[in-house]
Image (cartoon, rainbow, N blue to C red; front, side):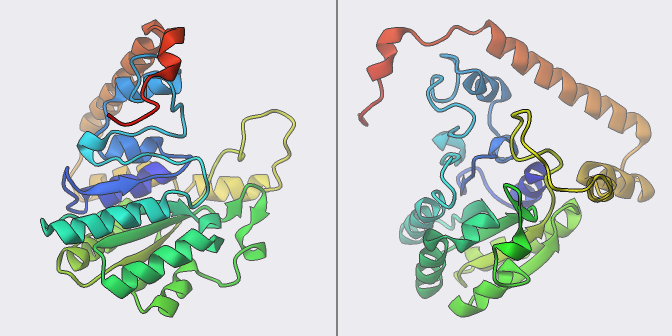
Amino acid sequence: MASSTATSVKRAKLKRDDQIISTHRGHGHCIAKGADLKRMMAELYGKRTGYCKGKGGSMHIADFSIGMLGANGIVAGGIPIITGAGLAAQLEGRGRVAVSFFGDGASNAGPFHESLNIAALWKLPMLYVCENNLYGVNTPVADSVSVKDVTERAAAYGIPGVVVDGNDVLAVYEVAEAAVQRARAGQGPTLIECKTYRWRNHTEIQGIPDPRSPQELDEWKDRDPVARLVSSLTEQNLLTEDAWHKLDAAILQEIEDAVAFAQDSPFPELDTAVEDVFAD
């Protein structure tokens, strides 16, 4: 549930000019950072009005103006990029932080270890947020990661590693807030592991087997982060049922408007294929 993690981290006192980088499942991160839903949806549809003029598609949405340095279709590909942004933030000295979102599989890749090493060495203002959904495609994390928790790897680089229930919005917020404050104070990076789950199969292609049992899926669906947050806020009298229904309806309408905008938008003209190949 990347959207739950992204929302919690974004609300943990991240500012507009703080920078993030995402993964092949980056839609929730984009929205949480403040992306325009219509332009994002248009990009998913490959339309000219999209963030990348229809050339980036689902896996490569970016909006530098809000600090969204891009989603990345390559596993672990974004980690060194955002670490470079963390170095830039440190050199500029304006108090910005940088956040890397990635999955459990990326924690096995070289760029993850190289980035954590240099970030720890130079005390870069970084958050490394691992969204551990317990499976890499169809391989259980226990069969691909050598440690029980990805955060155990933080010890090798002398930085804090914190495990949190990734389906508990408020718990993620608290952990992320502390890590953001630590980064802004010049104390270096933090590795956060959000234990979460992917409800759907790795791909929507029909005929691809899903090794997970119906019981396992049901158990995780009962831990829906949105439902848990609404329940918690309602119990504390911070949210009424009527207010929640109105908010839910408003969000649904915004999504429907974005889909309509994307469907009505034009596809890119053929001669635009060679535009934006080089930076101005």
